[in-house]
Amino acid sequence: MLRILVFDEPYSVKLRLEGKLTDQTVPLLTERWAEVRSRLHGRKAIIDLGDVDEVNEAGRRALAWLLESGVKVGYAHPNVRPFIEELVCSQPGPPQLAARIWKRLHLGDCEERWDSAICQLCRRICSLLPSGFCPCGCRTN
Image 1: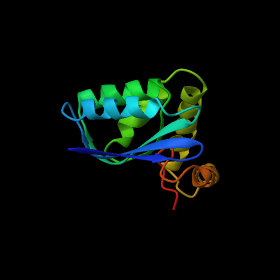
Image 2 (image 1 turned 30 degrees about the vertical axis):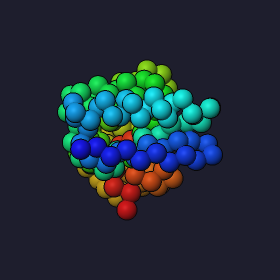
Image 3 (image 1 turned 90 degrees about the vertical axis):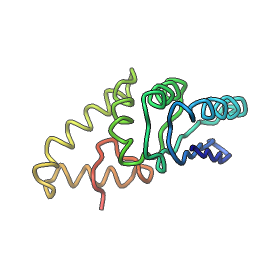
């Protein structure tokens, strides 16, 4: 089962998904996306995957298609986050390069020494990002 909530805001439209993104629920997502895309009118589209705990292959293809269509990911459930990071890193252009550099810089030092200067800088940067989105997957607390 998949529940899709749509929040219209002045500068964006947010799609919040709850449940499982599988073969059975992908058609619902594509139908809802077509509906939302027709009324964007220059606003950006954001998808919130915070309550999606399972994604199968059809769901992964649908998410890849959405990212290629220009949808930005606002938050992803920890079970889905590694796949989303992989998708973001595979997108061409500056976001791919920035995500790879950020991940290498951050993970290279922070996994070994949580209190290092680089890690403290990364935590500060991550704390400024939208809630729940850290390209490196760090702990910002």
